[in-house]
Image 1 (tube, one colour):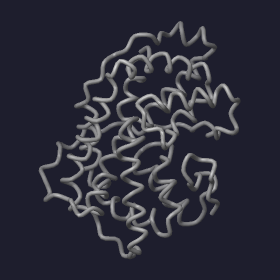
Image 2 (image 1 turned 30 degrees about the vertical axis):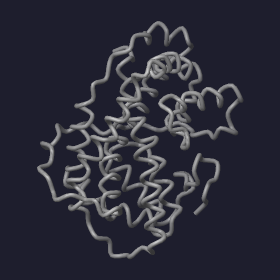
Image 3 (image 1 turned 90 degrees about the horizontal axis):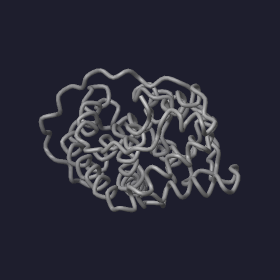
Image 4 (image 1 turned 180 degrees about the horizontal axis):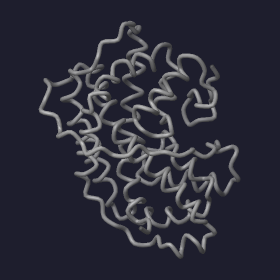
Length: 278
């Protein structure tokens, strides 16, 4: 197992995962119905036993449909405006083919689906680790079945592998909505289409500069934590026992991701998706 320091936080890349970690990654992709293992899971893999402990705790709640239901309710409750600016002709004029746009749309859908489920699941695990889990509450209605997001994710270049001007644009996009400590992986995937990065930068930067994005992000985090608290009591108890310092590391890590890139991107991705031409 190779731990990569090229990611914004140390992680085990999907391409480098072997043995139990590779099997867990495969199960995560299948359970969430997306072709990507988000950075939070890749980062948890660096802690001895951390990924296995977290996934065994959460898998039954995923399997029950409760996380999907709460995630869908969270997404449906967002008041996301439709921003003007992205047209089919602007995408074509930027040199993007129909296949490029389809691939980009798949990436956006994968992150929109997985981030919402991850904030519910991880905030529930955080509540357990903090000892703040609430009694089970009435779960959201079971969701309408959503098709899994199928497709092949493009290469995931590091900032060092990008030309300087593209790397700078990725970092500038990551600064939209602040919370810059962790670089959102989605922008690295989208860096395979530099013109598209320029388009979405022009779309979302003014919205954030006007102070309209921050309330959305704070609302996502608050509502995600609220919905998660009622699921925490349903988490499984893994067979393995983690050392106290490892549990504290997991707690701090999950908190950074929930209140940072996951909460932020749940607000940002639908802004981008809803601006795409139908």
